[in-house]
Length: 72
Image 1: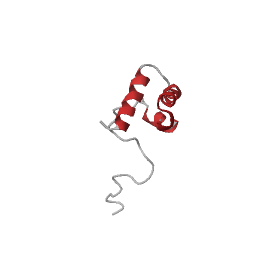
Image 2 (image 1 turned 120 degrees about the horizontal axis):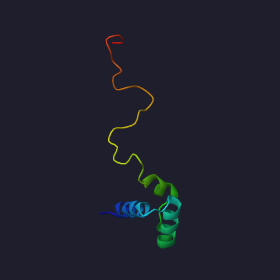
Image 3 (image 1 turned 180 degrees about the horizontal axis):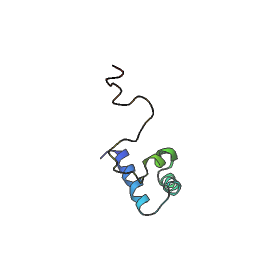
Image 4 (image 1 turned 180 degrees about the vertical axis):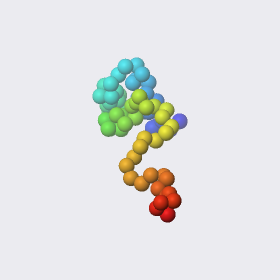
């Protein structure tokens, strides 16, 4: 387990204990000092309601099935 995997595990654990992203970041700052992750990184690593989602969300742009008999 590398250092980022460990930090991600700590973030997930603290989140599951009920801490907010800001509280987790503040705790990491007080513990790690200058080597703490940025708040934006902590926030992006927080578990979300879509955790474990394997299907990607709809994105604008060209679809997978762009070719059809009408436009070929």
